[in-house]
Image (tube, rainbow, N blue to C red; front, side, top):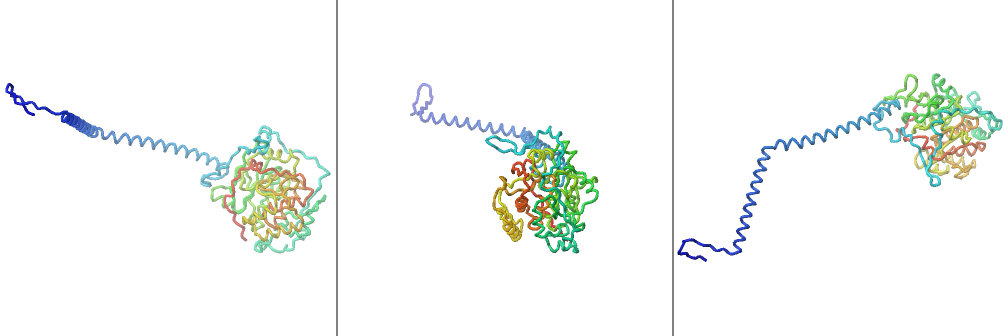
Length: 474
């Protein structure tokens, strides 16, 4: 509504309340818009002035982070390289011989189990400080032993019917017996279990032309061994793991001998692991065997495993360790714990999975570790001979696992190993099948320590087989 004022000619405009509020809101929006516009202009000025700093600072931070990460990686690489170099030096190999060492290598921690709610060590060894005081005991001769002497049948007895054939011919004919074993008849087999004061048995090394040739230099070294830890790798199968955990006393009194063939020598040279001029790799004296008697490398491996008394005629004690394992305890301490303390002649591990020979035979066939027809021939013979299906002999498992064998060299233990070797040659190379039978037939053998599986795990670090052994070709 407009009014005319005759006194001052002014114009008065009257607004409603709603129009006044709308005008206020318009002013606020205008101020906000001017503020945003000012902020954008300020930001644009800052970007134009400081854009180089905005690029350089993040880049510098990223470079610092990457440098730190690379430095840590280099330190880790250097540490691992140092560990690998030390391991290779111990094993007598070059850094290229193994990309990653086995997880179990060089472990010394004890294996334990729970007994009556209390955790205790599986293998009860003496304290380490007492190892230095251990020595080979002087044994008094006893007149009560069941076997006083074991004589070994040789080619001079003319018992081998194929004495005119060569070792290579026997290999191609795939016969179980050859010039190394002699031809054991079933009558001789039965007599070998009839324990008496003087025994005469086949025990390998039948003929001078039977193979398993060792140099005179190595023979001379082996003649001087009173206690020996031995292993073998034929056909290039496994690596050589250095023994650990021994005392200074054991280093002076114990021989460590590894048997290789020429295939293994060449395989190890490919990974820069070479025998030194002194015949050693680390602590192992490596004995290279030539002219192996069997095409089956598993059978060749039974010779050093079972016939250590023939290879080391002056030795009083021996410890056998399969090539897939690293021996990790003091040898004299092991002899004290497993033989001397228990008054045993032989110590061997119980089988971890089965107790019966007949169950083991099924497993052997299922895992293709022997021909079914060979296993059947062996079991039929054992049934005919009356081997019971008992799962325990004398309170111990009837089935044993023979990757570690600790024994005293006596006429009785030597006899056991001879007849065991003959069973392996006659039937299958799976020695678990024949050991319970041999023990059952040799009823005079009582002093055996069948120790539990966890004690075996305390004795060795198990690596498993590295590669398959190559069979011997004629």
